[in-house]
Image 1 (cartoon, rainbow, N blue to C red):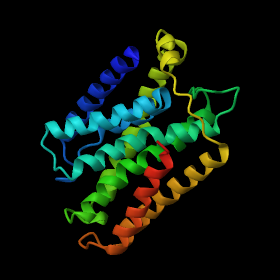
Image 2 (image 1 turned 90 degrees about the vertical axis):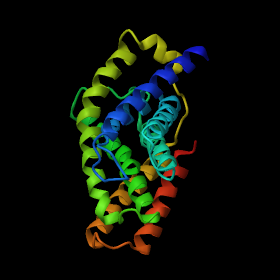
Image 3 (image 1 turned 180 degrees about the horizontal axis):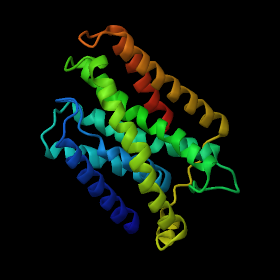
Length: 241
């Protein structure tokens, strides 16, 4: 328990630092920073499971509180960080095989799986703040979605890939393996559930992109608000926390 608490505190502080740095560059004023912290989503989730996801959520909330973010924004970013780390973990738990219990990046197949899981991580990080901005009449969804999506995609897939490759080697087969085995999250997911979560998340992400392209960026839209609000709720439900 003590090891779990210490590791969790370290993960919270690291995520908070990344978020603080990210907040210095606002890609959408009053809504989103540079999303540098997105590169932590897959390493946190795939290596630490629920511990990593909870740490990401509290790290995000802590950083936003310190920078004086809008109180409406903090719970949305809390959920975005939580789901972004945990949803890929749940899907991987259902897709993995007994011969390959951990995701190690060593060939085209495993890198492709990482990219797919990365898209799952991107969805809540892009949708939650954009939907929140729409609901609270800060910025229309169409005006903010792609500005949040693109840096999130870049940092999740590029930065996240480099970070996960190093971290997974350390914790799965290096000096950190003993610690990882003590903290390993053994929560399981059925293959059918994993496939369903994968399909729903990717469909919702492409739907969000379609709505952002179709609705003029200067307009708030109830259709977007309700559609993406339902999708955001589905993302939360699917985590099964």
